[in-house]
View 1 (spheres, rainbow, N blue to C red):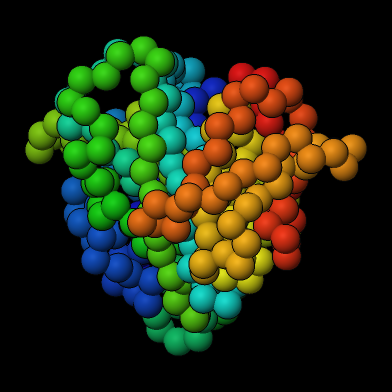
View 2 (cartoon, helix red, strand yellow):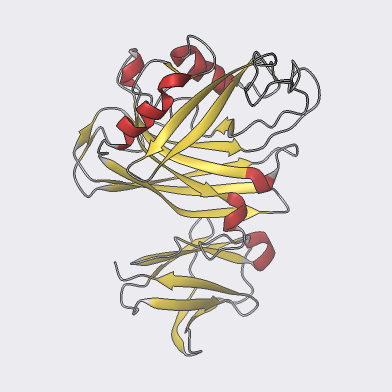
Length: 314
């Protein structure tokens, strides 16, 4: 079994590990394209795809050096919607540019599963340190059976090098762009171990250093199901809202034609601050302006269900 462990980094705060597998049960076609472009040996890593394969002994140094850099973009998740029944994930990504950029800029989202176990040769881990006294894997067996595989890349929703054509070829400071990915988790993926890695990358040629990542952010699917970040199942409660928190607008997304043609916006003290007449677009969505609302917690009531959202002051 071989694996290429490569890191994409979120500026200043942390490193985000993603492991691309090769010639085992966790191999996938997009991963093969990525590893063939960067890997010369295993295990090696690349950081923000700004370098050739880096050997393990240099990883710590490379993390420090990369995190010391400055990015021209900030990636965020406007919202993530997850239908438990359908196992469908809808990801709404945003990039805000904090500098000037030009070239072929692309969104992407990597579905990462942590702590993957399996039986058989496709999951057993070759152990070259089985006889090395003092190593953590000393006498663990070769291969190691029931090995815990960390941060496994399961899907590239924008392909190996991203979704082009969404971000213009020339952007300025303060410009922002959005993109939506939809993905159904296969039955053998553990939904409680899924992390989404949203990123924006640049594709400028065939050189190893010409397909680098500007910035990335993560979203824990399991945490989102019990948070107020905006995960709702429109097929279960009738509608969902995003982005959440929101500053100037809110999108109400319906899972089915609503029974009532009005929505109420209710403040945290129980007062109805606005009544909305629903006029949906072709995507079963309705955009609500909330610029004039004071920052705070609010609820949207469709007569059958209530969803909380947060109005920010920026």
